[in-house]
Image (tube, rainbow, N blue to C red; front, side, top):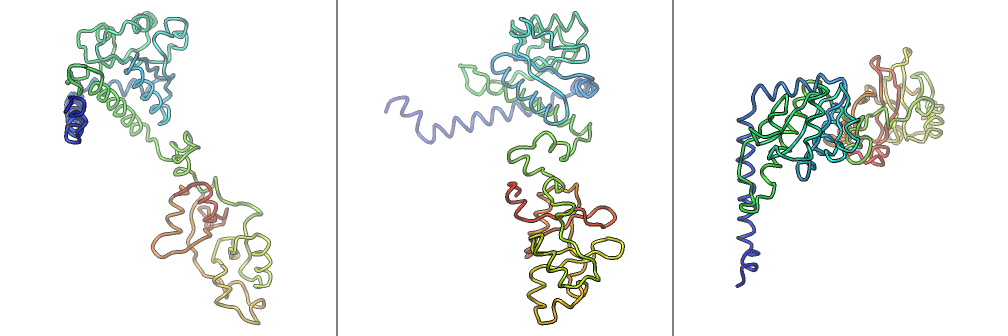
Length: 329
């Protein structure tokens, strides 16, 4: 059997994959143990910026820098990526006195970073260096040095960035999460930056999907069922919310209530005598995904959910079809 064929055997493939993960896990464990007050200072500097954190790197480190910038920007820390080579040809003008720079280089000797390092030093822009080269040009030029452990790459002699990039990526995530917690950044804040895709659907708020104003099917407690049926027919939601003398939601009449009370005298009855009192409700600021869980919890088959303000007054109506159309799950 040829060497290539042997290398493609399941046992050889799984062995290589598990060895890779084991080496990278070891690298992350070393990184965790290496965290110290310098890491704390980096978070404090970034949190206190009036401007943005400019992330920079070349090659694989550049890809990691882009990801760190994207993660920070989406979690409340203004950040962007600037390519060091482009910076040397005019993009240094994107870096202001209110910014700081996070420069990534495993060796710390990436030539393209030279002009950026000199620019930061000349104009007093805080430079945070992330490198494994303790005596490197980047390390010596940094105001804050985030020193990564010199852990072996997973690919052996080829030395392609594997463990090193995993550590830098994880270091960036650790900075981002520390900043999230320091700022008190919430899921609601996160939703503002993610209106599209699955994340946007998962973080959509009730008030973004509910029917409000004249679209709500409402009737006072003293109204007749005849009047309530007209409202139900006009609004088309298969229900009517019932309000008391203070305008608070006191009950709901659904198609199911109608079937249970069907009779020749139905239209003469008061809405209050037919309604289901104390209906389950939600609030405008609640996540739509939480509202869906309320509607489907246990054996519930709620298809309409009224939205009430702090005073208990209805401000909207959420239909399960609205949630499903929006991709909420």
